[in-house]
Length: 280
Image (tube, rainbow, N blue to C red; front, side, top):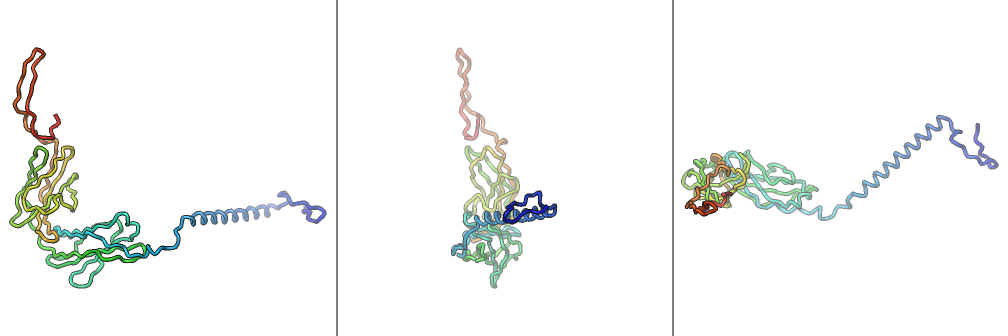
């Protein structure tokens, strides 16, 4: 049947007038249209979250890292520095630079959340200079950190036997000397064999003992490293590890036990031991 489309008979074609091929073609056209419309909507929505034009601030040079320090420990040079945590998202990372008489070379590139590096490619007696620079997301290199100069020497021998004594409210750690003119750093941990590079003492110790706050709730581990005094630290091998377990502490006995008999019974009194960590 043909559709009537003259002026006199204004009759629209109904779906029943389409051939199967025409219906299939119409469906394909509609499907393509829907896909294009969906893609346009997705692009429109995703575009709403895009940032505007880059600001001048994104082209600023990053601030220099601070607090660059170095420790020579046996076959390693441990380097560490500081950088504000709240500015990490503006950085791509850090370049660690090293020189040994000539121009500085890039020793390593580190991610923006790193604050330390271990250098193992060095020679005893050679002088090295280290510095760290920050790099922002646009690849702009910031100002240099302070330069630290280090000449690793032969580390001193480890300290001798370590022992401890429990006081009323403190722990006294002591060890045997490693030799004349040698200093010491004490390291503390709550995990066996795992220690920070930052010692418990703020300054290297000239003596062979240290008083620490007594922890009666956790097992604590200590180790001592001998060192030579410099603007950097030449640290030797760690001492034996000392384990402090509060459950093994032996308190002093009560003194002056007295008995007072009464009609109701016998009352006992005694002098309490001096240790503050006794619980009953």
